[in-house]
Length: 597
Image (cartoon, one colour):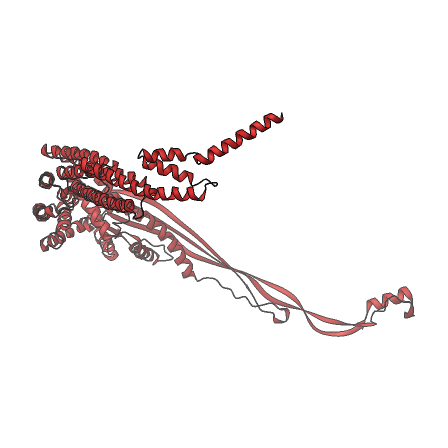
């Protein structure tokens, strides 16, 4: 055992001596790399040795010296290699520069003391950036050319950019421009076939491929587009659709169309003026009025349009006037003025509620004709030009008064006297005269008031009003009585009254009843409002009635006949200031646009 330990010690010492003589592990390999001129691996091996903690000072100094030499050798090697590569294959693209830069950056750790590798990398990066900037400029040129629809120029510029810097963005843009070129050709083909609708559809697809919407007017196809737009506008004007043609032309927002737009304004206005003049001359003022409306939309400052509109409008105004004749109502014997008062009140109230164009004839004239000519009401209506004749009879119109007067009494105190207290007397009976045994001693005497009865008057007063009015409304156009009704009114007013008795705190209440005149007036107003509702219903919502007439004629395809109620409806809506708020008026305006061409 002892012999084996001695042998192991000898082996260990021998190995230590051998290691000390040969140097640390890896030194020989580093020297071999160095001898074989594999300078990068040699430098890496020597650098690894320097990380050993037990490296001797002399050996560390020798390795540092070798590393200094190796850095110079590595720098020389890679600079020469880069130069040789550039001579063999010139750097014409950004990727070739990037490859060379990466190759040098991989050995930047071994740059020599003069930092020649870093300087070369900086030079290559600057040259690569210049090439990248030039490619980006070509790219911007390509995008601009594409937006201007110069696709050949765009593709040429983009190919130049790709040749300098074949990045994915440039390649994708190239495919996009090729697609845009094909779409543009489809637009051109559609225009060549004179299909503006199809061309616009294709152009919308093309526009969607750009970041911002395109303007067809900015393309080389402008002349063809304008030609087709003008052609379509001519089709519209030939069909009498002047305003639609204007809307269509103006929707393009093309300065090139300004001349055509001006011409449509002039020719359209003149067309409507000519139609209006002819209609007015031939006795069709309603048609003339409608055409002056269209002319005014195109040329509102034209004095001829204003004059025609005024003349035709006056005729339309005359045609929408309707008249009501309200005769004096017959009166009861007890109130000879009641009938006249009723008819006057009805006339006044109707004036405040009837729509525009409904007029009330003078009552005295109606009464005179009824009295002198004894005409039938139907004939009278035609003589007066009345559409409705309202007659009535007041058969009852009176007020009855009654008073229920009663006498009432009230007790009041007029003085007082001293009398024996009943409670004291009762205590004497119960407990005797010795008050010391009483539980409570009431006063011996008390004061007693002297009461007097006073009479005063009180009661209720009542007034009852009674009215009965029979109404007949005669429709002169139909020649029949259109409405008959008896209106009854009963009105009762009751009030209390009483005399004052100040000593008893009773206040004076006067009899406060309305006068007979006030009661009669209240009944009259109530009946008048009911009668007026019936009359108003005969003329209510005139705009809807005009519209219904229009729709009736349109439903029968009697388009010329529809123009008369159409003009009446529009004129009425304007005069009533409701043309923008009422649905019927809005529909009338829409139908004018559609029917008046």
